[in-house]
Image (cartoon, rainbow, N blue to C red; front, top):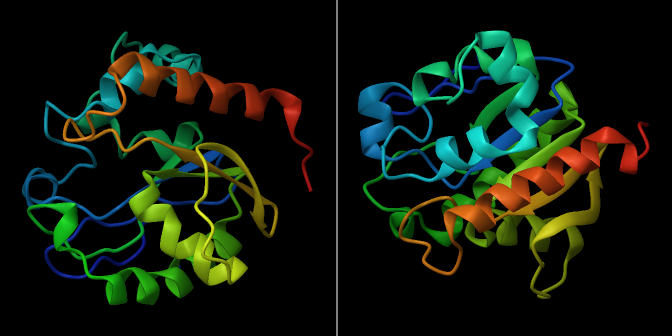
Length: 194
């Protein structure tokens, strides 16, 4: 795998490299994001506003000389410690269109990416993306909870944040920002480097 991994036709390329602090893992790319060529491209998605308000993005915002990060910044962020991929690479209009079999098939690819690129933290967006991964690796039917996980892949600690989609009405934009702030705390030394 290279820094910009191959993407199937009609998908987004992975934005990955060695020595990342965080790899953000979405459920799957939306058709709109693929059309725009950027992760979380829909302006109503809460990822970019919440990430921009968080302490997690402070150094990246300073390095780029911006107050607010936008989808157009996604390709610049790997050089600043943040990468992007998806649990399933097939784009769809809605995440609910992804089949359970696609999630199961994506687990092996995702494990390989995490073992290859070894980020400090792999941040899953939403239980829908994380649940099949968690269950495949632990063999349990337990429900994972949000936040820092005990499960690791190599040196990578796993973190579960709410899905930033506006369809996820259970969490507010302020809640989303708090999870990214918590992730920043994890990066500042509350977890050992292996």
